[in-house]
Image (cartoon, rainbow, N blue to C red):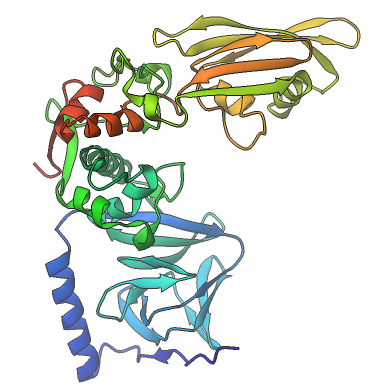
Length: 409
């Protein structure tokens, strides 16, 4: 077993020795030099009930709000517990009680390493909605660095650089939307509920270059911050936002044809096929309470209407009960993806851009694309980058009439 040095507890008073003052001054200077003055973002790394353990793998300072209370050595474990609706931290038998704790790096590189992963900024430990929250609080530009390579392939050399720059602006715009939403406890999830975030370990020299060369740029329309969505593969046509996310018409989120020969045809999910037994379809309907039991037979499936992009708007599933009574189940729009899912059930359906056929005991979907289809098509952007388009032209292709400008302009 690894022998861990104890956490060094600082006095509650604000008196600090000369060494600590020197370290803090150095930290402040490094932060000022390395980080641009942009917004701060709070990313939820984990929410757990009732406890969480953090294995510390770099030397850290522990703060109770603004007060530094301990030096936590690499090799220690921080046990995070709930104590009457507030966090209690236990480090080598010592208890630390408070409303909100922060971990910051005590090392010159400014990197926090816990549970095998590295992060910039601070780690916040707090309690909300009956759960312990582990939150990475960091500079917006550093957040974009931790997202970009998780959301788009890097490619060879710099062939994808302009696509990465376009996506960096989309990622930053989306994040600023979420910050402005004003969530009390955190701004963004670290997974597909928002944008996939991997911290320092997700960074690469190329994606960091894309972030640096688009520093602080977001998308705006008529001078106001844009509402941004993006997806993997459009399949030849993007989708209008009001058919998926928004009730109102948004001029720069309309359906466009993605080239006479679709740009995103290089995507591994440009075309796909899923084959289901009829029993699986019945089971999926039952799991979403669209049928009251599983004792039904699937009689037929048909597409009732499509959007202009070709994506399915409504589909009808005809089932019959043991008594011979027939029922109709209507599924609309993007809920089709959540209900039908892939044949193995591991993911929501690739897209709603598909045709279907019903066989004696199976249903076959033959489709194109991956994702909801709204906004920038990532694989289309990659193809355009490889064709020599710059990031501004890529963005104007997928978001007609928008412009990239500084966040605070």
